[in-house]
Image 1 (cartoon, rainbow, N blue to C red):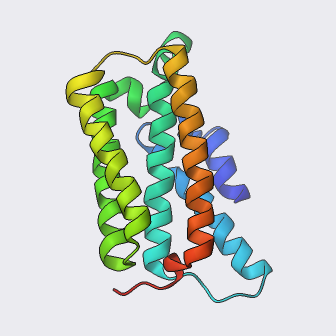
Image 2 (tube, one colour):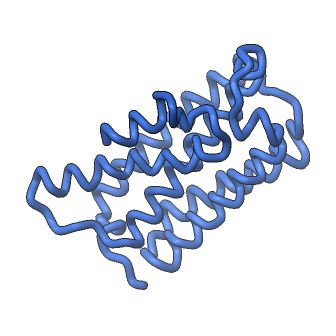
Length: 171
């Protein structure tokens, strides 16, 4: 985790300034799961779970980049979102959400979490093609979306802990 942090933040690497690598390096968050497994002397997580968690980390990072496009452009910060634009970044996020939904449905048979991500995917389709398109969100909308994402994250963590489905892949 320390090495990932150094690669992400410090020169000569400073991956956070090298799109699209700033998205891929988010896999470092998954290392906390490895550390937890080691620290608590548990069985290693299935590869399918690691893949899902990695995609989730990528998708969550992209959501933040979408919200930060204007400040990042003003600061001269290069991110994937500032380079490919709001709509294309949302489409990348949509692809990740669809893959995550597939993994949850078919690899884990977790229809609750898959359903939630499916609904979020449908909202993103409406966002990209009908409601917002290339327009930035207002401050009030960003606050609402941020609150909604945090509530969703807490509820999904509770569900994951309760169901244990991410520990039991069927594929």
